[in-house]
Amino acid sequence: MNDNLNIKGKVIAITRPAERSQKAADIVEKYGGIPLVAPTLELQVSNSKSLINLCKIADKLDWMIFTSPTGILSIIKHCKDLKERLNPNCKIAVIGPRTGKYLNEQGLDADIIPEDYTAEGLLEIFKDINVRNKKIGIPRTMAARDVLPEGLKAMGAEVLLAEAYKSAVPKDKGKVKKLINSVISKDVDAVTFTSTLTVKNLFEVAEKEEKKEELIESLQNNVLVAAIGPVTAKPLEEENINAITPDEYTVKAMLEKLFGEMNSKI
Image 1 (cartoon, rainbow, N blue to C red):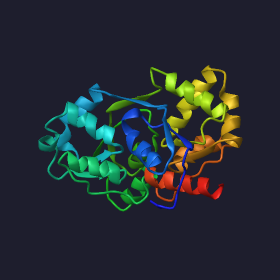
Image 2: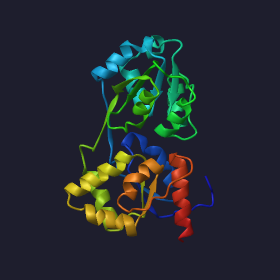
Image 3: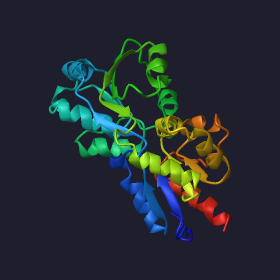
Image 4: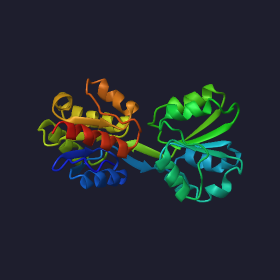
């Protein structure tokens, strides 16, 4: 990152799930900022029937696609011999390098990592691969967008979705409510979002607290907003909230772009 960046004393809200927030918090602190970790999304690992079934037919899969480290964590937790069960000719695709790195740590390697770390980026690569009648397993949250499975089905693939984890509004909403109040009272300088659900869940809690209008007005006018990519930025744009987005869809790139914007305003 750019060592000339300085956000001393600036409060940066991180809405990622708690177990994924440390890296972002460390980067904020490194550049003099104060991280406000307020997860608006809670991940709950699941041993669903669909995940157990995917494990049972792992030897018949032609492809396995992982869209997050949590999907890998969940299937390995509930299918401890996955590496041995997998069809030896099964290829693996991951949505980005962070997921690929986690996969490698579990003893498996990715055959495909798109340059565009999105479902659309993965589909672009699969356009050049014949997946007609191929069995493709995707362990993920069922709250995720349908772009990837529907796109693969349109290419003739047999897609086997498995619920590996649930993405939900946190059971304890205390930190989310604190974030809402802090944004409205201008006690934070920026809010960061890394998925559409981190945005939607914040709005959902604010609406139940009858503070959604105040929250949106403050995000429009008083607080900088950063999104990891255009997909995440979309629900913000629908509320006329301008979001800073990086060219590379990573937490590091998002924060660097945000810090650069903050420095330009000093």
